[in-house]
Length: 484
Image (cartoon, rainbow, N blue to C red; front, side, top):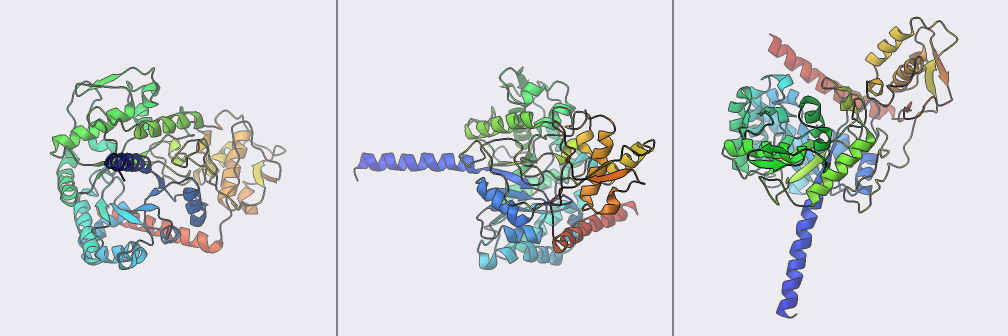
């Protein structure tokens, strides 16, 4: 082959491989905090149908990891905050965790399940936790790293710690001063030393939606990458969107701490579709499309031009009706897909098409709903609905939610049905002191969907309950220890 042809071929290969790296760097978070989760095997098919090749987990659920075996999907497995104390105090516990949740799926250093990262903790620096996890974080991370090394997997699997955006302090003004919160600073310094020594990236949450909610001068246009947005100045640079401003806030903090070139992974970013004002499918589609276009443009940010995040994980793949809603009812509506794997909007995640592919052959409970019986005395119906919502998911009824505008007593029916579905359509779960009525006529209206839950096997249900109970028990014991 002539020299010029060789050069052209080499240039083409380098260019296409670089572009592929950027596109391939978009993954999703796969959470399992759902009363009736889509079976893991179907979720993996959903991921593959949409050419999603990276997934971040919040735990190490064995059914999930087994379903990912042989899929060639890159996986980040998570260690819940509740386990940090035991992993910090016991190298044996760390060895056992790595054996059960990493080595088991990568026999002889292979990659039956392609685990790339172990995420130690889930935003352990979040303000809501105070300092309860700080004493255990670094020790737990070091012990997990030592266990990986002992298993001869340290060259394949990196240890990381996902950090919340509130780990930083900045006024989002013209000042370039950004620093870690005083209560975080000591542990964060140790963490950065640990990550820097290993060559691990800095995992961080960036949430333009929450930033918009909590910051008066951050407009909706600025959050959605709209060209009409008023620019912001920061660190002597001009910013046209909230993502770049937030990202460079992280860059500035890392630079101030002595790590100006540390790789950054956006561990969570998304836009909810329900449960709050401006949480809608239309706005979510706008945000995700423009975010992905921005990442694929390879423009980077003012402080890191032509260097986008190493990886970006969208929050999230599916809605989860049991996520904690302390920060807002929208927390249960981050999904690109509904709880049953049906696309809420259309976006190209790498599948080469603007349309997402839905989950196939989903098995549902019977076509039955629980509604209020209008022939009864409804004077106590509101109290019954509140009780139902306390044990189900009524976040769509929130101000700004998709069902907020439905009238009484339809909103009572929504609450009754949510409880009824989450309790597997058992007849007694539609009693409500005689106010409930089971119907085969779909009560959904306009944009307010009265869902029917997914059918799950008894074995799967008990495995889910046992796993979630274990996490709850560990969290309870840890909280009790701190209370003493």
